[in-house]
Length: 460
Image (cartoon, rainbow, N blue to C red; front, side, top):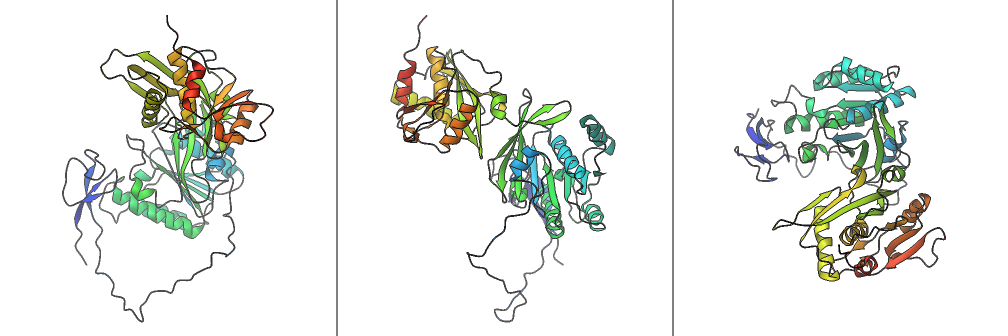
């Protein structure tokens, strides 16, 4: 038997090095390298070209009929929406998020709803005692839900417990970083333990037909610890996002083998638990500053769902040699590009101004169509003129100053019409031959047209 060797593994990216160093050469993280015992590997098997012991693979044609994966609804419409319609038997789901964001609350509510419908559910907590979980269940009004609650972190004991009875419909592990296996000489939460424990549980789930949900902690950069090790093993990766000052929570799918990615579910955190938000656009716009300079309403798409959200901007003269650029909820590089386009192509002098941009409600935007709404908010703050309250904006801005077409125009405008907006500033290439009667479109082909619409800055 080969002797076990030592390896130094980065706990942030999973890179392996021969010696310890303070900084990982692969990801640049400091103090993330830990010495682990590598699993002993035997000599490679010598398989002859003829008469080998392998099993012949089977092939199918591209035209073979494929059935959709069966779904098991949890009873929480927003959770099922992000999953693609519900839980898929035999699949593995990884849920990550900041500490205290509400991961355990969300999964406890989903587990209780599924168990109440008659499906067997097991909830294993490795961080909290049973009394703590029962106290949360009592606060949420879920004490009567037939959920089997346990506290176990030993992988062998968990597999043995699950194997001795009928396979449950749902298994929740909170969290995967607390699991450990006796066969691995490493501390819980290290790359070796994560790889071994996650693979064993996923194998059990696929063999038994149970749906496995793993809770994963995130690093200070907001990434699930050991992403290269865990994310490729599971079928679906969900991130639970939110800000401490906001009551809104966003459940976002970043990987889904059985449904669309970038789909979101919106929840509101209350004392009695997470409440589903059926109309997030109305919620995000409920407290918007109407009539104030520096705001614009963006009609965006998150997955298959249209969402209207307010973009706020503040442009003020800078007293610093290098003006500040602060962004919350949007890509800072995209803001820098937009300011450069306004400077070079439109003659708007923002170089000596401090620029602050915020997406109201704590939502993080990744839709490139937010360029036009952000530009409208910046111009409104810079000129001191409020943007019209009944207008929505969407469109992508190129480096030449052109306003480029974006997709899902009908869905964006229908959502805006439903909330009472009567005018839309859109790319000229998106304007259909027959316009909607409920909303009047203002097509733009160049960003300079929007600058001319707001006019020069007001002087005191």
